[in-house]
Length: 255
Length: 345
Image (cartoon, rainbow over all chains, first blue to last red; front, side):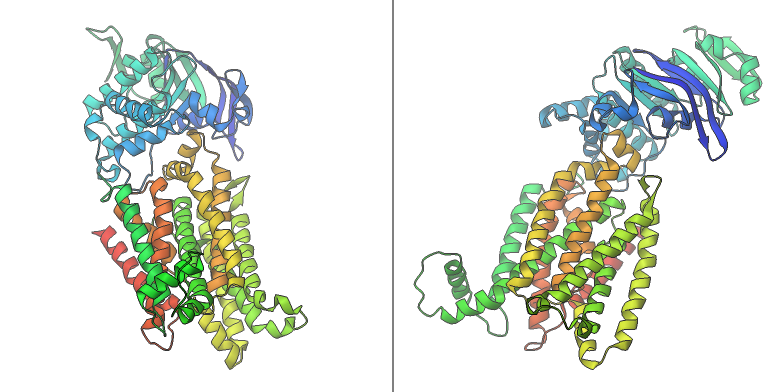
């Protein structure tokens, strides 16, 4: 389980993240919302150990991230960055197969996992293609399959951190991707996902963290966080919040 | 599929190509030996009991001249290609070259110091004489690379972009120092310097061969152990870190292997360009970018290419010899341009 306690990050003299405490619970999808520059990616960088905390600490199963060996940590935590810069003509399976690096599970098992992860990310039909021949959205789904393969099939004690996994996807695949993430969490893994689309967040997340200027404004259920007054305060956006007629979660409509 | 050739087919082809290159390299030269005699003499040299009639000359030429030269070509070609793979992986750019981290220019500077300043070291012990040039080149390459690596480090992390720029700056600096030595040199040393700067397998001897063979074997055994990590590094440094790779250690190993390998190759055979750039690229076009195939295949392809280039070098103007660096540049530079233009299309 991943816990952050009183996390602060300073860049030079500027504090870019302050006072964040949170716990990623097994089986839960935690969404992170906030305007550009609110510190969402900084938070993700701090949670995965890429950015050193100036204050506070991040604990994975009650041990600081530094105390884990790279391989053991990679078996428990996978991270999907916002953009990837792979510029070599690997096949789609090879890219997803890189997610199996922390495991010595053998070629047969790895191939099974790669195929299942590709299906889960709705990228099964991309098998055999060259990564460089894919569109931006297809690449994004291949990388999602890669991080899913890293933790496959997903269980309690594992953590998945996703930085805007839907930013380049068409509407259908925004839903299939988050549905796959949802199912992954249902098998026990804890998921943190940075999103921009408030309605996607309302539908697929169990809890939401709202950030503004590097500080947490709210951390609660979507019903509690997605209120017109707090959205106006953080995003400067006038919204109506209604109830989804079929599913009951909040539905946010710009006025 | 992204690969044109299956790994097994590629390896069979490359091994056959390499054997052919070895055979021709042993057989052809100012005195051409019948191919069958070459084979029989080579078998006798490795201890197969064959009748020695009519093989005395072949055995002498083979043992004293062609065999060390061929081994030198294999080791230099293999290790240069491997270093190219390592650098292209480190910089995550298929157009990177082992020279980028300053090892070639550092070695050239070391050699220039040894050649031009050689008389200053007159008091050295007799046995060290033949090693002086190699040792200076090796240490020069290692020294400049260490400096480039040091300049790229900040807050305990290595920034490869800074390393790249530091490498360019130090290469320019070392080149101007070499230029200064060239200006100061007299005619005889100038000729040695020029010839050395263009590279040659001529005058290969077992004494110069051993250090290179040991180092290149070490590098060739070590780097393939990092093949999967190199694959992951191509995703990006932080992605590789999230996959459990110790990225800082991996980068250190890549720079160290390159400095050692290229340093030893340049020390033994002078500056031979474009092998490290072109060979990995060519293999990648055929077999895809997976380092588990790319690393061993590049060794074979690099070794073969260098032997063929050496054949051209010694046969094109026979009995005179072309510097091999000229041959590899003639093949390599147009190929490099082709890659650039092809990428633009």
